[in-house]
Image (tube, rainbow, N blue to C red):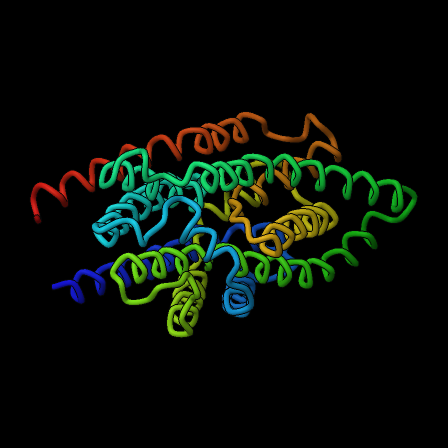
Length: 331
């Protein structure tokens, strides 16, 4: 029975990773698609490949996810906790995808894991210091990304102020191919590791392994699941990110991609999970503000901001409810 339950965890985690792939495809390619630097299908396939490569490159974020919220070795019902967390995160991702809202898969997973741990083991089982570090990274990274996007765009405006707009856009349209690939790679280095971390969390909780070292089969399966999800594409969110915040030109897309990818990769190198959705959206907002503050559709930004604010508390309650159902109906 334990092996069957653990198999359910793996399937759910890879399902979450797959959904994360098409939910967050927009993060990497929305700007390059909206400016026609890349055709949509080409952009999606490139993003899938680079996500796969990025997912296999690092494991530090996986270890943070696996031990930052709670110690899986101290949870006798840790596998059931993981199932509740994944069900909650998947449901929230599907709801926000359906309505085209670029919410955070990271917030959904962290909130769900915290809610499930509280339901299954009490608030005392939460690793307060690790949870605080994760939440701080999730909250601060969008602010840094906004500033990065603003500064990069401000510098580019000064450099190319006297250049022909047609020539500038032509050059940066080519540059966007490179930055979209970099963006996709950085996305894989951070987001795919969240599924790796949650599977490893379950393996430790089930007593199958003693450390948070990510097994090779977990790396490969999570990387493949995200790449396959990315290949499907999330067109509703691509439309929101690429066209509804402000009219993006190639130079703007280049600046947004560079700023956000740098923030994501830096977070990966210091083993901190960040919301790629929040980081990339904030970078786009920063670029738009540097271009012209009034050009940003702040009503759309406000709708996205509301989704950011409510995701963690909603998923905490959702996961708590899911765990209650699992505990009272199936056990």
